[in-house]
Length: 545
Image (cartoon, rainbow, N blue to C red; front, side, top):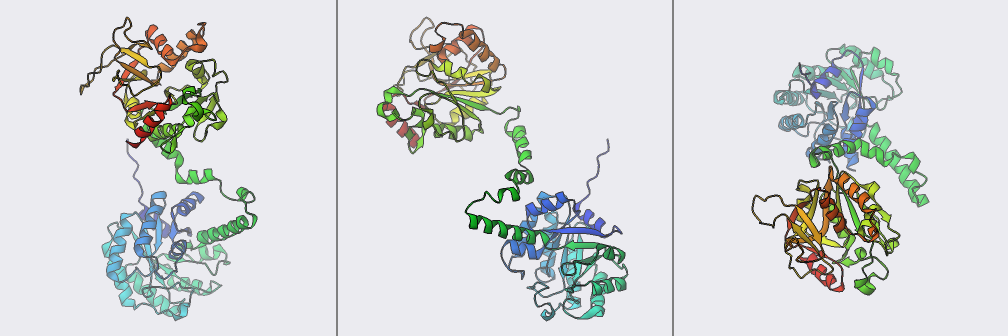
């Protein structure tokens, strides 16, 4: 199959200049305005020196350096597929500056540059235009030749802007200069005027007689019907500063309204919605890329946090809030947990609350309530969010603090259901009733680890299963078929008389009983749960390490 050849931006600009039809390009001054111009349907962009200076709030007298202009052009070029013609002032210096400018513009895929025959530093043509001296013709021709000799892309365009009419030197001088610039290699002539009528522009066009493409900027003589330009064989019309002027007018009005009314309620319906900004910024493409590169299996990991209990052993500390809202080292337990999730791109979190849910900061989470939290166990809380189950999810207790690598490595562990097991069984730094894990093999800490599976979870040591190989910390990952296995196990356990008192450990044991493998992800310390007053100081020390 033949691959379609892409047309370069410089070739697109040259095609506009040489189309034989009247063409139009619109001013832009930054990435978002350039994108708006393209989406409006324009075939090209005018990188206006006036507008780019204005958006920096400096004068159009080369106060914005040429490197700042080029940097902004890079954003504009990256955001669009249509060609950009830069308003290059005088070329920012002599022939040598011109050579470097052309090289830098081509590197950023800018299609062409227009330079004017004034002296550096320039002043805007509409400010004391008649008092501004013009460059010597030979010197300006040398600048054009230097630019053409420096370009790598044969389609890169250099437009010579003739300021003779602005400076009051008349048609004859304008024609003399234009012919010299054409002979020097300019790809087109821009003839400029500050009269409110297009008479001298039309006279020039008639005398020029299509010797090369002719470009105009009808900023002052804007009332001239467009068909007159078409009949005069003008090649390209530049709408030179209307985007920046529209932006300024709108911003001034909106700002004044908000200041006067001390509210944005009256302006919200008259400005672009935030989702339009996201659209122009390409937020949807980034989301797709995240799915492709950050989550290559096409699945977004979600989290379910079980945190319905008060934590009676914590005494007065939980009198007005659940324990996950306790502050540890300046952050609540919940905030620390959410930060760990976000570090691993887990952005959807559902929390099952019970005790004093009104005291929970719900920013960044969706909350469900287990109203019977005082008489039910963890499994009953989990049933509150079965509808929130996902094909890739973390289920965890809400009173855990842990090092970031634990969650990171868990997400990289293959398996339909994976439980985090601490191999340091005899560690006395943890309070509460432990969930001892009995696994198919102990952690060997080898470089190439063999897969281990959970055989049983119990609050008792030395059961018929032998010595425990670790402790379950209250965190597991479920993915793929594991979701259905858990839903089936919950349905089965609901028929048990003691269902309301069952724990997540009971759920794990049910999975094992029905021959659904629970893979083990071994760790060695580096976590804290908060069950008693002694855990508060221990957790504070943990966060400082």
